[in-house]
Figure (cartoon, rainbow, N blue to C red):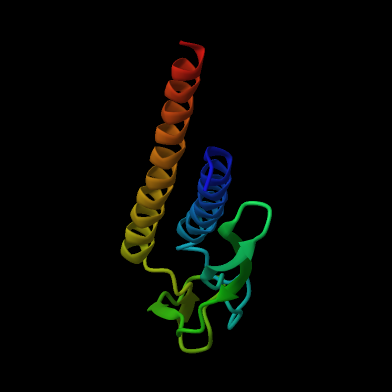
Length: 136
């Protein structure tokens, strides 16, 4: 595998993790978004999926962002009878987003991004040293 291939593979990984972090940020931003009307469903947590396939041009596996899946776990409910979205019993549905889970997912995505960034950095350094040797 050559330097360009390793750079392209790492770049696809960085792109995928960037998309993952965007979805996680959206989940966190909507963690307290209740429905607008009584009984309405609130924001549903989104989960990014990834697909990998062999790229002939690169000569290796690359990763791409797949479709967004919706988390089908139950919504949480809180007793808030004065809320505009409260049902007849006074309960309001809130998103199925757990900020702790989202924070852990965000940290994992950041570490994966950093690992791919290190591959890019090392590949560039190796390419630079190779050019220096060829110039000598």
